[in-house]
Image 1 (cartoon, rainbow, N blue to C red):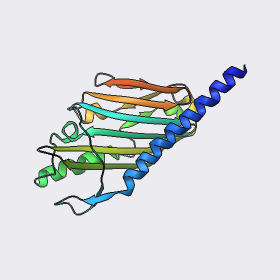
Image 2 (image 1 turned 30 degrees about the horizontal axis):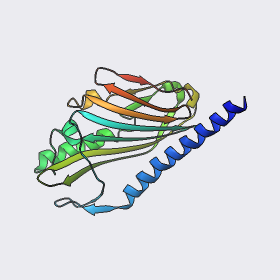
Image 3 (image 1 turned 180 degrees about the horizontal axis):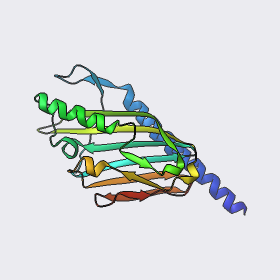
Length: 196
C-alpha cells in the first residue's frame, strides 16, 4: 500500500516536471521574436530542426481539467512549399492554413462528453534559412479546459482531411498515468487517450 502511494507520488512529480518543462520551453520560444524579410509582422524565432515530409509531431499534456497541445508540421504538408510566400497566391495559402489551424471548433476534437473548450490557440508560419536549404513549418499551440476530464476517452482529427500531404502525426502524451507515444496514421480518424 505504502509502495503504491510512493509510486503514485513519484508519477505526479514526474508529470509535473514534464508539464513545467513543456510550458517553460513554449514560454522561452515566445519571448524571442524577429522580422522575416518581406513580412510586416513579428514571428517567434525558433529552431525548426530537420523534419520528414508527411510527418508532424503533436505533444499533449493532460493535467486535471487542463490540456496543452503543441503541433509542429512541415510547411510542405500543409501548403505544398517550404519558403516565404513569393506571390499573393502563396500568401493567401499561408493565411488560409493559419485560419484553419485556429478554427474555434478545432482541428482536434475531444470526446463531447468531456465538454472541452479551447481557451487559447496560436498558429504561426515559420521560415528558417540554413546552409543551402530553407525549412518552413507551422507551429500551433492550444490551451484547453475540460469540465468533465474523466469522460475524455478519445481525440478525433480533421487534420488529414484538411491537409492531404500529411501522412502521419507522431503523438506524445504526458498524463497522470505516465507517458505514451502513438503513431497516428492518416487512415485513422481518432486515437484513444489514457484514462485520467
